[in-house]
Length: 166
Picture 1 (cartoon, rainbow, N blue to C red):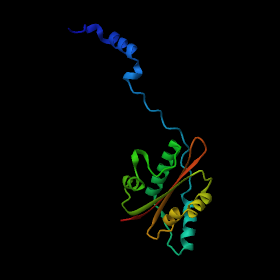
Picture 2: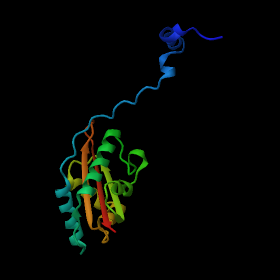
Picture 3: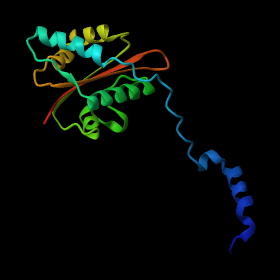
């Protein structure tokens, strides 16, 4: 037995009414919360990092724009999720994010933080943490990028990516 051709819109309305539209269609995910544009911190934070590297007898690192873009994008992602994490959207690592931007690395490291008000406090926090300090004072590192983005709740999310090219 076939349903009459006129079943069309009325039939669909009836089916949706009986089963509820929410059971048939998936709701779209809400957009991520609006966050501030990245805060310009690369120059200041890099100067602080280089002062610590100089005190340890190490060569300075220089800002690479691709690494800066990766760090800023990761800080934006953290701020949108209100979550400090090394894992980026889609489960990416810093190395994967650098690859996506065309930076061919031989080694990389990432420091993240949340809540510090400025470069001085975040770099001091990283220097007072053995793992983060090790990343900053790694003699292999040649390039740096730093991102900071303020979430809607006022928390600033920080990302420092360090790397050396192949």
